[in-house]
Image 1 (cartoon, rainbow, N blue to C red):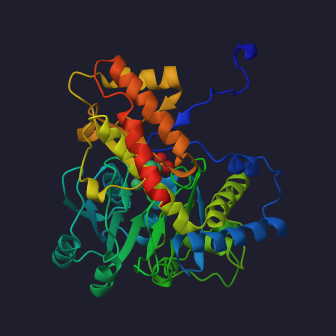
Image 2 (image 1 turned 30 degrees about the vertical axis):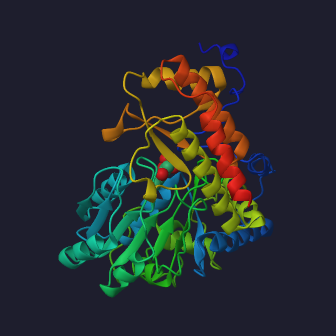
Amino acid sequence: MLDITQYDQINPPYRLLMGPGPINADPRVTRAMAAPLIGQFDPVMTDYMNQTMALYREIFKTQNQQTFVIDGTARAGIEAVLMSTIRPGDKVLVPNFGRFGLLLCEIARRCRAEVHTIEVPWGQVFDPNVIEDAIKKIKPRLLLCVQGDTSTTMLQPLDKIGEICNKYGVLSYIDATASIVGNDLQVDKWQLDGVSVSLQKCLSGPPGVAPLTLNDKMVDVIQKRKCVESGIRNENDVDGTDEIIYSNYFDLDMIIRYWGAERINHHTEATSMLFAARECARIVLQEGLDDVIKRHETNGAAMLAGLQAMGLEIFGDVKHKMNNVVGVMRPEHINDMEVRSLMLNDFAIEIGASFGPLKGNVWRIGTMGYNARKDCVMQTLSAFEAVLNKVGFKTVQGAGLQAAWDIYSKAQK
Ligand SMILES: *Cc1c(COP(=O)(O)O)cnc(C)c1O
């Protein structure tokens, strides 16, 4: 018999989450999630859905009508776009520069795409010309690329990529989960066809919903694969001319019909997550999107300067790193796990480990969303200094904090 007295009410300890995500949600977001549930087709709910679409058009800097959320974590958004656009046998090209490039390959493979990759070592990004040359050679139907890969902290420049794709008739899809609102992203200006993200990085929300945007070209490709499920089909529902989408949950044609005037009963929108997504966007737009990016830039620069002033080496091409996360090389003879445990147990601060080729050798420290704040940066730097000195990596006391303070006073001028 299960002894229910052994199962306490959920009551996690307070942690300051300074890793590569998830991060602490803004309390406004968790308050919005505690609002009462309403019915899926209650006009108040459908109004909130429409408002969420309008708010995320601003976040993505796009006019795309089809801007909405997929219920599920970031990879649900990725999988929805890939499942709905890639037909078995389609050629895709993935410029791979980290773990999330590998995830794009993985999902594309499961869509039965013919997957082609180009590679740079972890810690670097691609010259757009290299991507163009690969497109000319491989002639893919789609280009799949990450904007900011948290596994390496790198930010791939994308301002030329849409234009290059258009020149060769290639559809572009971008995973901007880690970079959105922490770094510049202009969906329309950069001519990107589809972009998806999630809340748990710079948008200050919990994991569980994936905002995305699709332009008309992408929507056209998806709608050619129309196949409304039998339980909700009516006589004017004629199937599309192209192959059906081999997923029901991620059938973006049906999901578009749920979010649009037809309001077909595809799934039940995750009410509390929709409230969260709406509040996340509202918080950013109240502060001002460009000011939010600037805040990530300043706090990221302060964290970077602080770490460097402690005598630590930074991982990767620093010129191309995201504003919101930094990779720190583990000094020789210092134990990775011991440092992270002391940070967590003695200071209640979580920093990130690494995987793949960086496993055990790089710590990833984030300054994202609600935690892209001076107090979070200063707390993390002082704790990190104390921990490193305790385990035998000697720093000049206070040098990291002073370097961060210098960045903040410069930013005020
Ligand atoms: C963090 C991150 C994700 C997260 O995916 P989940 O499914 O939410 O775990 C996806 N893509 C990128 C680029 C990320 O940095």
